Amino acid sequence: MAFINSSRFLGFTGGRGEPLNRAIPVIEPKLCTGCGECVSACEAHAIEVRGEKAIIDYERCSMLNGRECRACVDICPREAITVIE
Image 1: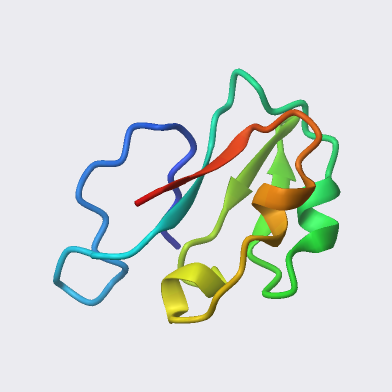
Image 2: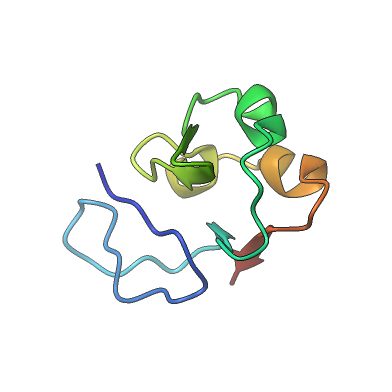
C-alpha cells in the first residue's frame, strides 16, 4: 500500500516505476476530523479512518487508476481533501 496523508507529495510512482502525471487526492491531517464521510463516498474502498484521521490507499484510488472520481473531495465537510494536479 502507498499512503500520502498531507499536502507533501514526494515522488509517488503508484507502484509502476515511473512518476505519476495525473491528479491525486490528498488529505490535510490538520483539517481532517475522521468523520468518515469520505469512507462512505469512496466506491473503490480506498479510504479508511485510522487514529481519527482518514487515509487513502493509492493502489485502490480510482483517480490514480484512470477513472474520473472526486467523491471524497466533494463530500468532505471540512474541505480536508484536495486534488494536486
